[in-house]
Amino acid sequence: MGVIESAVDTIKQMIIDGKLRPGQKLPVEKDLAEQLGVARNTLREAVRALIAMRVLQTRQGDGTYVTSLSPGLLLDGMSFVADLHQDAGAMEFLHVRRILEPEATALAAARIPDADLAVLGDLLDEAERLAADSAVDHGKLVALDQDFHSLIVSHCGNAVLAAVIQNMSGRTVRARIWRGMTDPEAVQRTLREHRAVYRALLARDAERARLHAALHVLGVEESLSPPSGDAGGE
Amino acid sequence: MGVIESAVDTIKQMIIDGKLRPGQKLPVEKDLAEQLGVARNTLREAVRALIAMRVLQTRQGDGTYVTSLSPGLLLDGMSFVADLHQDAGAMEFLHVRRILEPEATALAAARIPDADLAVLGDLLDEAERLAADSAVDHGKLVALDQDFHSLIVSHCGNAVLAAVIQNMSGRTVRARIWRGMTDPEAVQRTLREHRAVYRALLARDAERARLHAALHVLGVEESLSPPSGDAGGE
DNA sequence: AGAAATTTGTTCGTATGTATT
DNA sequence: GAATACATACGAACAAATTTC
Image 1 (tube, each protein chain N blue to C red):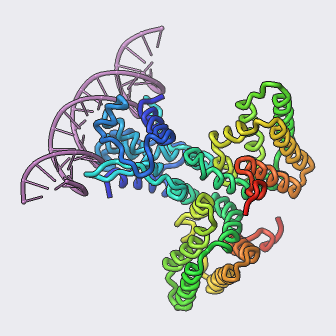
Image 2: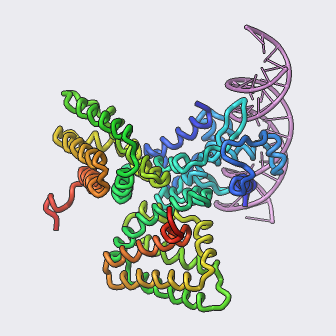
Image 3: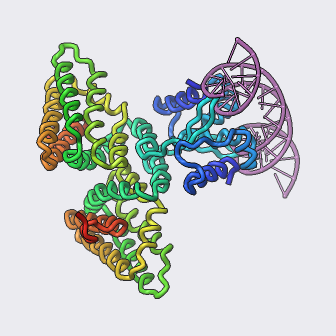
């Protein structure tokens, strides 16, 4: 095994063993390199690999630190994967989201605080105002859409579940979904579905919330790839 | 933004734009560094970051190549995240698996080829032979358990779904689960659950498979953290 | 406010191990 | 087996940013 990989594993192990804790500062490059018996340039490549995994973080002139290691942070490299497979694979990501998001929405029904329910209402109002405009700003709609789902899912009580869902639809895919809604009716339908989920949450009705969330993601899926039954399949 | 990050983004963009395709060889370090206007060491750190993301792969004496970029490959960095949260967070990963695995198992019921069903049977037989032994080899049981679930899930028809499930239970967690089964009865129960899933797949019964898979993962979850209801009040 | 010390960022040069031809 | 091409690794130096005095 290469020297760099060994250095990466050593640092990883130091974290797993608790010798390096979240937020803690690492020894300076010169010292750590000597401690691991490698050159500074070699250590830097190891550190760079861990930075890519969101495990470490560096600040020039200050030092290198262990990140919070929260699932939300460590799992958000997945969105790049989702963006890479914009073409055929996008459906597979969306399918995973269709399985997870209804469950997370149901869980959130019992946990989301009233204050955030109010925020959800505001987001919906703003989206509907935007959609009513003649020149629809797709960019802002995408952002509002993301905020809406993100806020709900973040209250499911499971940070891993929230992070995975969040990354199953990268920016590119989300943007493509809304861009595909040239039909104003499609936009209106999406907003209606959002409001249905919102009302279920307001009523603290987990099962209604689950069903509406499922229906919504399924609708998005079908808008990307119309079911073959419509076009006269086999 | 730093020079290294720019280099990483440039290479990423080259892949997204199709200028670099899966399996393709990159220019040699010297040339690529010059093309990006950075030093060789700097380029190496950028490449190292992309290697950590499983996007690139290097072979000494040969060159640097773009990987297959398959979801299964790119998402398998998550298992490290799962291993990092061995303590409290492990339950959250398992919960996600409980949501996804029943669905994947149900999907596999219609797709898994007869040949692999036979392999599943062999895996079960071997596991039961191992469990009958007085000195149970937990290491081998863990491996068989992983093979069993992996084989089923790999036939769900969705590579992303399969990869996410696969990484929701890292080696460390899986090992801990089996190590925790000091009670021979617990091992037997797990094997019975496996066989129930297997029989449902044999019958190509998706709904039965889904339920047995859900029950199985739930059992694992509860073995790790007994439900509070059993041990007395809240 | 400003200078010095500290730390990461970046570059160049060189030597070595490995795979291909 | 020899030559070539390439990644690997090391060492030294300077630049840029931050903290400290």
